Length: 249
Image (cartoon, rainbow, N blue to C red; front, side, top):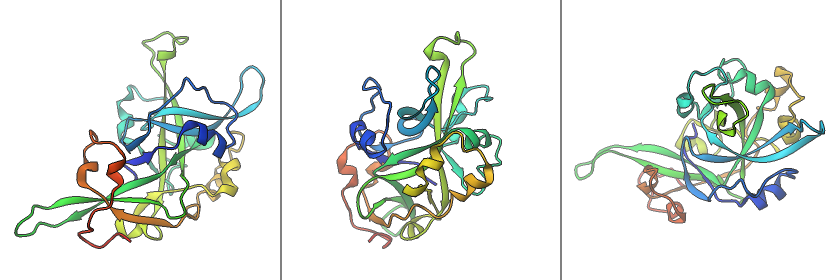
C-alpha cells in the first residue's frame, strides 16, 4: 500500500515537468515530508473547459482519500487512499472514476514499514523506510479523482464540492518488494497522455496502461521512527538511520 509520502516539488516546477496549461498560483500547498491521508495533495489531470471546449492539463490540489460521488458523507475517504490495480476497474467506489477521472500524483518518494520483533531490551516496533527513484525526479503515481457534493450547501457555493483522490497500487517490484508486497503504480512517461485523457474510456485499453510500474529503480533507506507520527514534518525525516533488519540499500 501507500499510506504516507513526500511531496516537496514546487508547483512551478510541476507545471513545467508535466506541461500543465492551467494552474492558479492562488492554489498552493506547503512542501510536506509526511503527507498523510486526508491531507491536501497535488494532482495532474485533464478536463474539458466548459466555456471553450478545450482540453486542458491542470495542476490541482485535492484531498487524499477518495470519496465516491454517491457516498452519504465524506468521512469514507480516509479509508480509500489506495485502489488495487487488479480490481480498480470493477469496484463500485472506483470504476466510474477509472473510466472518466484519472490523474497522477507526483511524489518525491513514499514510506513503508517493517515490523521489528521485540528483544530482551526493546519492545517490538515498526521501522519506517523511505523509497524513492534512484535517479532522482518524481514518482508519477497513478491515481483517480472524484467530486462529492454536499447537498446541505447551495450548488453554486464552492463549499458544496469536495475533490478527492486515491493512489493505485500494484505488486511490489525491485527493491520495494523487500519492504512491502505492494507499491504505488507509476505511469510510464509514454503512457501519460493516454492515462490522463478523459476521452479515453475503454476499460480494456485503460487496463493495459496499468502494467508494471513506470521503470524507476527505487532506492531504499531506513529513516527515523519520528515519521510514524503525522505531527512530525520536515526534511530531517529523510535522514538515514541504522537499518535494524537489513532491508535498505
